[in-house]
Length: 253
Length: 253
Image (tube, rainbow over all chains, first blue to last red; front, side, top):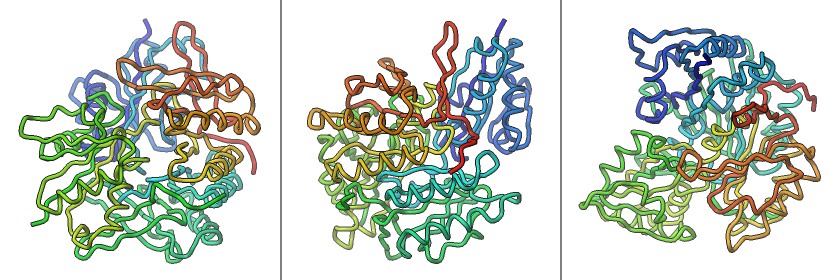
């Protein structure tokens, strides 16, 4: 009697960046759980049901979706970008892990998507062309001291750093603090990319040296990419600059 | 008289995981540069030209493609996965940076795709659900000591680690050495995922505790994901296990 649950990613926002696999899964599902603006990206039919919730209610949303799937419904859980990166796939797994045994019998599938850092990187050049990391700057679910430790390890280790969830009304100071920490480690000229709504009509990509990077350049929908000491900027007359991290590295350990 | 150059990613391999944006760009281009097996994923028409090269000739391929675009051709450079992750986008930027000034006037666009670690993660659960990094294990372009330093920083810092280019005929011992290094830092039970050809008919996803992880389980087309101390495995009777990294973390720094 168990139904099915598919976790899909819409990609960065432009319909042309959502995979056919995810589009097909959305077409086959009946009940849709997700944050409203992500559900808005889908063109749901009248026979499909939209259950929107706030973006801070991920675990409750996961439980509601699993409850419906266990009751036999055909359920889709929708994330922006890739559902496996700081998004609903982990929330679904957490709920299954702590939930009733019958949830382990649900037919669960997770479909990958283009995550924000890849879309922003493509618009800027190739900043993720060499070793990199992704860090969520949200301290809702982990202590700030742990985030600081990871920023330090990543910068000292020569990783390019992509920051997800950089700032929100409830978390106004964290990005500024992170940039200060990184300024103490990385060269002043290290390129920083503020990428918002990559690939969408309201896209805004700003490249600035770390010394001038300001948290005010980011909002909730921004992915911030901080280069390593090896990341370079190619100026092009009449065209936007290309930011890239070379594939080679001469630095010893 | 300058032409255009688009860098596209085919995604992990299944046609249903390539974005419509990349498909459309491939349809519009005339000359295709890439590693043969990636070009094979495209359904080129008789009026489209295939220029295949070996997978270790990335910089030469980039120069050849830029030369043709500068001469007015409509060029596509093709990577598997996402072209910005250890792939052709960085090689194109390197070539532009060191090349003749007229290459800076070429209309270059880079289109993102689903990179291997996202496809493998989706098939396994949500191992990249929290802070993670991507490291190329190839020491062709950087010293091994630097790779060791980054593995150490990532494991000590609590990042999940995705390894690209884990092994090849010319680099037979590096993955084993990396696993040994990580065993000295991470718990013996840390989940390791060997993911090959995710989403394709010959897909093979193997989950094993770090203590048992063996380099022989990987080949050139494998992406290896090593969990953090917080990554968990949910066993499911009659179904494959779900591997995930919780969004929350109680660990202090």
